[in-house]
Length: 129
Length: 307
Image (cartoon, rainbow over all chains, first blue to last red; front, top):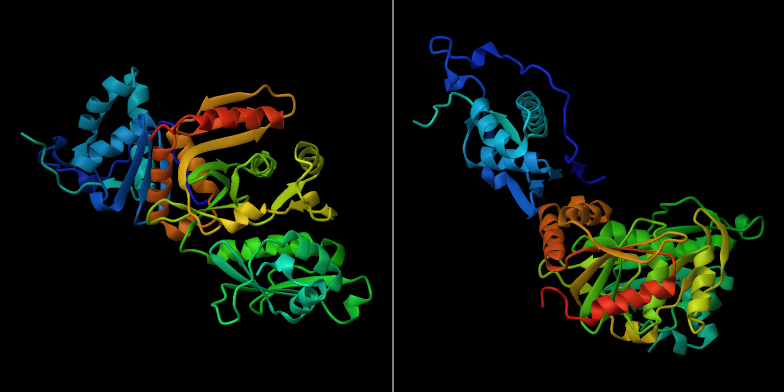
């Protein structure tokens, strides 16, 4: 099968991995707590019909079918690095009604994106003023 | 000159000596088939193909020989080869003809990477092409054979040759492979269809090949623009149903079924995307071949959505 289908990603909820090195212990703010970014914009090609999208990841040579939440999430990350709380705030209103389920789905997607090389945890990141 | 115009003995000699050169769509095929009993059915099946000159560049050199001198007489077995390699296990001579067809398809699928090879039948009215992608067993070849005997031009039964640069579909009018009950269905639907001999006991069951119409072979130089994408599915007893399919689902089905999507990578992704964007995909469920053909005639009678 040449294409990995990402359509049905709903990874079981679980706690987000805590990586001490990613915390700014002094500030203990959102500053570097859990920020994410997509791979370089030039690495992705998009074909969209409706809210779902097919993407081609140049680096891996894989094609993925993203469900609406996955497509919206990757677009947000593609625009600029964002922290988990911000992503959650942006996506929950439009895509999920249950806060806990939404957070779990979001974390699941981010982890899957990370495995696939589509997104990565961002290094030190400053929230927009 | 066409293959059918050769004297039968001349054809058989050329075939046995590996001097049969025929042009099929964009490809030049040079054949050597040593079992003499295959000469007559092959000349009938390939009758309309033009012979290309000796000094032309050959794309594929294909052989079907006795597996060994002994196996010519003792439980006769043949071996398919291409350019010195024998990629398949030997088969009884009774299955030689479908083996030659499938083997030739395999050579094209594994080497023609300047084109995106969709797993789809493609037929056209003039320069407007209807693409029929389908999984094996969904009735693609049966529907394709029916359409080409109702005035559609055969571009291909097995490979949709999509040129990534401009999205045009090239013609490769090879014989159409039919399986099992489809053979009788096409005989009844189009009595004028010319079929090769039936071969029972293959891994696909009983098979026979339909000769491509002369008009399709004559126009094999002519590319076509994709205008409709239809996913056929034959189901016993099903009422005719023509329903829209989401672009994403269609994209993934076409991409995952293409023979060399991974090899072409980004170019293939763009080409499939343009194809689906240009031709709003639909799904055709049917049990009656006549009804399906009528539905396709109605669908394609009007201008395509993008025109």
